[in-house]
Image (tube, rainbow, N blue to C red; front, side, top):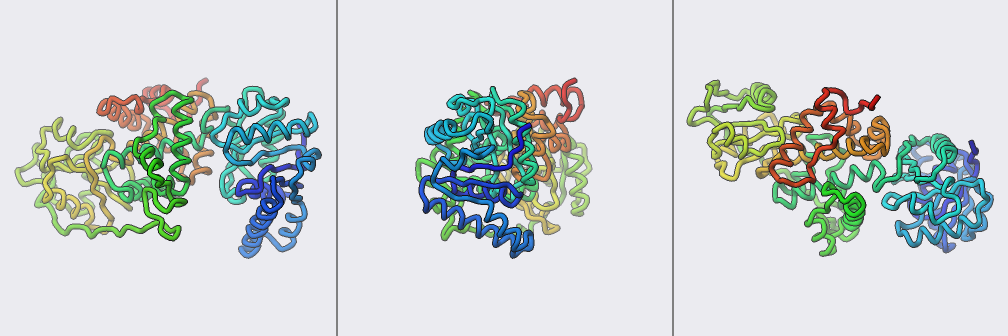
Length: 500
């Protein structure tokens, strides 16, 4: 295996200078190249500022900082890359620009050197094919901010040699990163899960099920996501999101990746998120607008009848803790609020199937935790009095309650089901191992656990039930379940189970 002791980085922007810093701090000599001296100096200044902040936080010493800066040589000349064991192209995400750079650098580098690209949407196999060294070509997908994010996706093109993967994997570990090896495929692992997850949240907003704040609060407080999907979309840029989804839809030819119409409309209007000052939220002065929580109603129901179907037992347990007067009749009394806890279904469907009065029926999402946020869902004809009584009761212990419009799977169930389903597709297609899929998503997105482990915690059969209910209601193949998920749900085994 080749030992990498000197790395070239092409591009001194955010990703490029971050990669250079990570290498230099780990004792690796770096050549950082950009087309203009001013760009090189901006890159040096940016990473110097980053090192200063690390020193102030006592994560490195002054001597560490000085040593790292001495290992970095900034230049505008590609000739300086001739002595590098590995060159990482980290230019802008434009395929034509990348191809031009890679051809130019490939001609300069010695035959044994490795050429890498830091990209997320562009095919590694296609980029490798424009060089004379496809066996020594690999994708290195770092995450922003590079010095802080532990994950690196290492992407094998069709011709990438094992020795190339081994050498780059060893370097990533030397940098203190956690590398996962991924087969070339649009979006690799993390973005292939992230972008459709955001798109599903946009679809919920497009359908008028809830506001952006309500959707994000449900995902943050109900599912422990570090940031809501729509706020994250605003940070990434809605134009970037749309471009990625269009690549996925084109390359996979799968409805799972069909971009939401609202996303297209927002981009067409120039509402691109934080960078334009307006996206799903306002961003006056670069700060996301804050939407205050409305006060909870004080109304309470005289009595509550709970449907035993699906997640009814969980709902009954919650109501007992709240001190609710529970109607024990086989059928609800005339004055009782009818509460249901559907799995993948909408409130209307459950009310009709259970022969309940839809004007008195309210659904409660009990698939996820209910200690930080509770979500209620009304039928189109639920009375305002019954809705207020349900909201008052479910918020009586101080936990905030969101009321959304009728939808199969609420919002959180359908979003999480899609995350798990796409992770199962990635496993089925052998893009990465099940364990690496979970590692990548947990580290790359800050989720409390990987999607396959999360699916296990919820129950593969429950995830499958949500998807089948969505598919039945909408008739949209977007919700077609992965063979990996189906088989493991039927067998009652973990979603992390490899085939023997």
